[in-house]
Length: 269
Image (tube, rainbow, N blue to C red; front, top):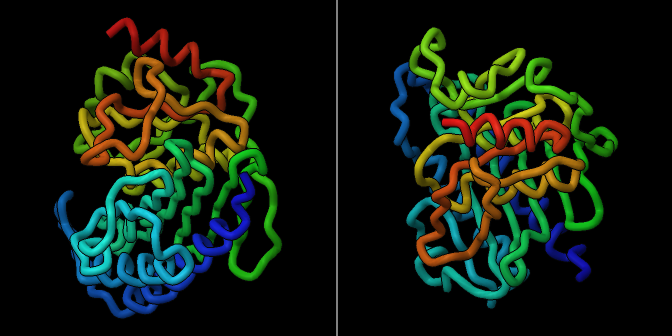
């Protein structure tokens, strides 16, 4: 399938939302103790911008998104042509003004991700992928460059990226099992998946028991099109567009070379 129209729409919608978010971010008063479930006016505004732009291009497509907004309420939420959107992935990063947030837009056709866009507005960095056409990154007005995962061959040498931990001195059971060489942290799953795709980390681990399609869909295809592998924590295939948009298998995204080693380490838990 040719996804050129969908890619153009996704990039345009993300860019418009990013411009709005950048303006809000500049004048936003930081909330140092922002809670994990914080939602801001900026989330809702960005989502409406994205959905309205997509609706203009594809009025019959289904929409799946995080926030309750008017355009989402009027649309079907499942279908053979489905857009999955997180207007601000990593809202705590936005609220705390540390730059760790992203706009995520994905297009799914008959259950398979065809297009994924992750925009980091604070950095003006766009990472995007199309099924069968690779993963690309563009900084500001610069030229797009192709992304490739690392060739790190062992967990002992790997850099793992994960969500911010409450106490870094007390690693999770999964982290203790994997024993990576280095650990870095970020609030946004979109940022984390993009960093694996760009070769800035080797492994991303998400141990949440339940989350939603919009948390990972756009970033998922970045990793696979950059040469990596994405599964559940025990090797499960991740399926999108199910009722409720739930994901219940966790997430393991890697450069592919260390994926089996990581799955074996996690299986021992």
